[in-house]
Image 1 (cartoon, one colour):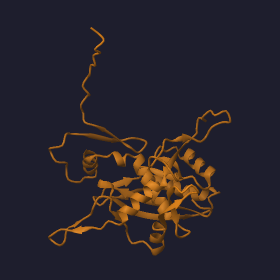
Image 2 (cartoon, rainbow, N blue to C red; image 1 turned 60 degrees about the vertical axis):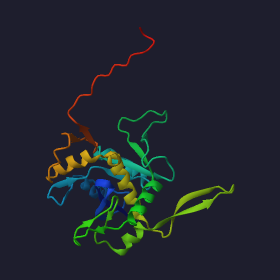
Image 3 (spheres, one colour; image 1 turned 180 degrees about the vertical axis):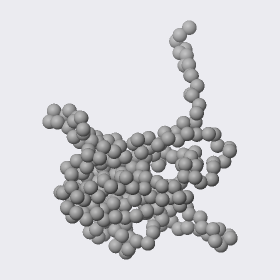
Image 4 (spheres, rainbow, N blue to C red; image 1 turned 30 degrees about the horizontal axis):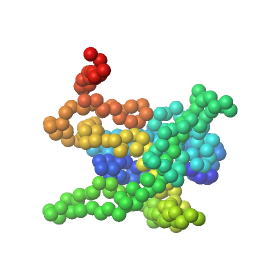
Length: 267
């Protein structure tokens, strides 16, 4: 989010947190006016074509609220789309994405009926994972043609040098405070780092959609929905349903067995 534009990237994530940059857009316009927000809202209705030919829509839509904060809050309220989540980066935290907090409240602390929730994103966690993944290289099998990508591999299309420089705009350094204790922090090596910030929030959106909890059966079902080869017969039949909030619900079709716990104090 900038004064004269909104920048947006579409990232896709797969098995082993392998990632693909699908596209990057720069929506020019004064963020204090409605026109540029209308362009952003249109992305919610778009689809992107998977290599199988299936049309895929956005599962989550993370919106940075660090600049033009009130306009960003108003956008989240106006679209009425549970996939849209307001986010704000924080330097430190125990998890990539924190518990959401209500930001629209009255002076007495009462939540407004049409209030929104704000998710804090620990940017350092996502940046460290991303830079570690950028160092990974693909392998070629003995046949000399089959390429194998490691878990976490980052796929980038043909993008300009400025975009790449923005992705690599920061470095992790160690500082010592006045008491001599060492602290690690991220330092910008150049002024512009928009593409890196956008990736961080896309990664947080993927985490909110369940990426870090996905097991093999989740991916098998998603492949099936895209028309890819059916899962092996050794896997138990599962049902994975997309929820309105952009996550997945998994069911194996079995009801949990009733469990009775007896106390040793009862005769």
